[in-house]
Image (cartoon, rainbow, N blue to C red; front, side, top):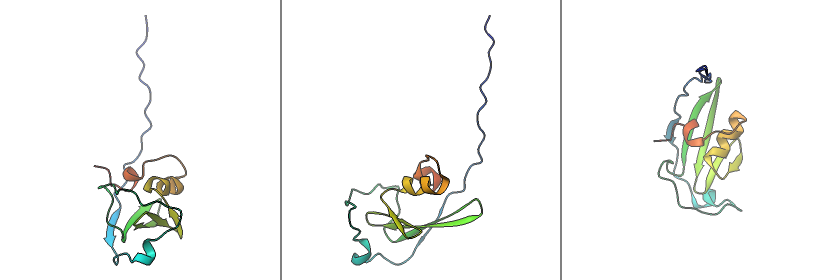
Length: 102
């Protein structure tokens, strides 16, 4: 006879969604980032020029939304998930991390 054992599930604290603030509209010079193709924008993303602000482990994180990427700590990333993975040092959805998922 088999025993029904429950697998333990890792409990994680729900994260707070990021705060969105619109800085100034992005200029043409700022939006031109070399080596990054312009793609169709996901409707979950805020407008270019916006800044996503999130507190993670006591540190305030600010990510600027560009026309064809995201700027974090002076580096340009092609996806919001790559920014989130850089911050938490593991695979994670950027939409979930920043509270942009529907």
